[in-house]
Image (cartoon, rainbow over all chains, first blue to last red; front, side):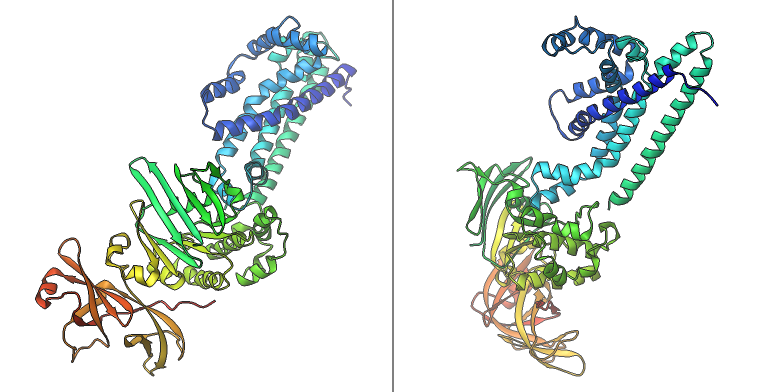
Amino acid sequence: MIEISPEAWQAIALSAKVSCVATVLSLPLAILTGFALARWRFIGREVLNGIVHLPLILPPVVTGYVLLLAFGRQGPIGGFLYQTFGVTLAFNWTGAALAAAIMAFPLMARAIRLAVEAVDPKLEEAAMTLGASPLWVFGTVTLPLILPGILAGAVLGFAKAIGEFGATITFVSNIPGQTQTLPSAIYTFLQIPGGENDALVLVLIAVAIAMTALLISEWLARYVAKRISSA
Amino acid sequence: MSIEARLTHQFDGFALDVDLRAPDGVTAIMGPSGAGKTTVAKMIAGVMTPQSGRVQVGSEVLFDSAAGLQIRPHSRKIGYVFQEPRLLPHLSVRQNLLYGAWFAKRGSGGLAQIADMLGLARLLDRMPRGLSGGEAQRVALGRALLTEPRLLILDEPLAALDAARKDEILPYLARIRDQALCPILYISHSVSEVAQLADTLAVLDQGKLAALGPIAEVLADPMAAHGLGARSTGALLNGTVTSVATDGLAAVTVPAGTLHVALGDASVGDKVILRVESSDVLLSVTKPEGLSALNILPGRICRVTKGPSGSVTVQLEAAGDHVLAKLTQRSTDALNLAPGQQVYAIFKSVAVDSRIMG
C-alpha cells in the first residue's frame, strides 16, 4: 500500500480548490469574450484577440512575472486591492487561482468562440420574430446550443489549471500548505532525497484527475450533442 | 388598409422604394430574384431597418422614421415563416410550438387546436431532426400561429420543398386563410401557388412596386408582365363545374362562356380557378370553326401593348374577366388589332388551380 504524506494531500487539496475557483470564476468572462470575438465587430477586436491568446504564447514565467508586477503589493492593481480591501494575491492561494485562471482563459475562450461561430444566426433571428428579446434569445437559443463548447472549454481550462506551474511558482512561490499546488509539490519532492515515492504518488494522482476530467467531458459532450445535434 | 408599408432604403447599387398598401386576407408579393421581396418582408417584421419610411399593421404603427418610432422586432407580434423551418434543434416539437406562445403569455391553450389544424398531434414529442421537410415546415407554421400574430409573413415557405410536399402544405395554408386568423403576406415565385391562395397581388421589380391590386386584375395587366415574367401573366378565371363527362373532361362555366378542362376529381358545383398563360392564347377576328381547340371565348380588345423584341401583348375583356394574349407584331398588324375590336380568344391550354378550400 502506497502511503500518501500529509504534504502530498495538502498539495492535492489546494490544487483542486485553486483549479475549481479559477475555472468557475473565469468561465462567465470567457463566455462573454468568446461571444464577443465570434459575433461583435468592434474597434480593438484584434487587440482583444491578441491579449486573450497571449498567455498561451508567452513563457509562463513571463506571465507570472507580469502578474507579480501588477498584482504584487507594490504593483498598481495589487497595491489598490491591498489598501482598499486588505486583499493580498501575491504569495497567497488566491494568487495561484488568478494565475491558473489567466493561463486557462485562452483555452476556454477559444473553445466557446468556436462553438458560438457554429451557431446559425438564422435560428436566433427566428426566435426574435417569435417574441424573444436579445437576452432571451441568448438564454434560450444561443446558450443551450453552445453548451458543449462551454463544457469542453471548462474541462480543458480545469486541466490546464491543475497543471499550471511556471506562472504560479513565479507569482505565488511554492509555500507548502499555502501556495504549493500539485505540480509545485512534485517539483519539490524531486528536489529532496527520498522524495521520489511521494512524487510518484502525485504523478499517478495527476494522471487519474486528467483521465477522469477527459472522460467526464467526453460523456457530457456526447450527452449534450445527442440532445442538440443541429438539424 | 390592413398593411401599410412605405419603405425607402439605399443599398449598394440597389434602391428600395416601396409604398405597399394591402387589405385583409392574403397578399402575395411576387417578382424576380433580387427585386427586394424578402427585404420588404424583413423590414415589416423589423429584422431589418429601412433608412426611412413607415410601417403600420392594422391600427398599430410599428415603425415611423419621421416620428422616431421603432418597435423592436420581438415586440411587433409578426409571425414569420422562413424558406427553411428554422426549428430550434434542442427543443421538442411541442416546445418549439410553445416557444413563441410563452413570450406572448398565451400558455398552451391553443396548442391542441393548432396541432390538430396542421396535423401535428402525432409529432408533438419528436425532436426536430427526425421530421421530414414538410412536417418541419408545418411546425414552423404552427409555431408562428401560436403567437397569435397580427400579421403572418410567409417568405417562400414552400420553395425548399418538392412538389409532393408543396401539395401537402398548401391545404393547410388555405385553412389558415379561410379561418381568417390574421392577414397574410405571402412571398412566392409560383403563380400557381399565388393563384390558389392570394386575394391581392403586389409585383416588385428592381426595388419598386410594379403593380398592386386584386390578383386577377394584376395577372391580366400587361404592365405587370415585366416583373412577373411573360409565362406568369395571363388570366385568372373563376368558374363553377357544371358537368363532368365520362372522358374526364369537365365543363366549367365562367362569365364569358363554358370551357372544357381536364379536372382530376371534380364534382358538379365545385368552384375552381382556371389560369391561362398569355403565350397559350390565340386570337381570331371571326368566330373560328373546324378547330381542334375546345376553348373559345368572345371578348373585346381593351389595350394593345408593345413589348420588347417585336412581341405584342393584347388585353381583352371577356364578360368582366381580363385575358392576355401574347402575339407577334406581324400577326397583330395582319389582323389590324385595335382597342374596341370584337375578337375570339382561343386557349391552347388551360391550367387548373382550384382555389383550395380549407
